[in-house]
Length: 122
Image (tube, rainbow, N blue to C red):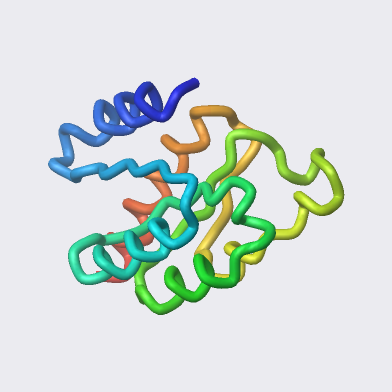
């Protein structure tokens, strides 16, 4: 499943709620950190699949933590069934929750959970 297809499914799922979905994919850690910093005052919440950076990036953790936005960590696969080093997440320490192992449906579950987080905190 490509990001383009996942984005389309997420947008279709939330079109009726007039809730914009911004999807961004990047291989540069610094660009991801900048994204979290630049949008922290505009966005309502963050769904983050930091891929390999999940296990290694303190910078992404710091940027998400500093954003002060609700965050749900998302993974397509069940990270608990993967290599031992992939079972540890630096990013999850900044997360309100984690959803993983449901394939592309993980993002739909995460959007529903984010909507609930935002609704109950307002």
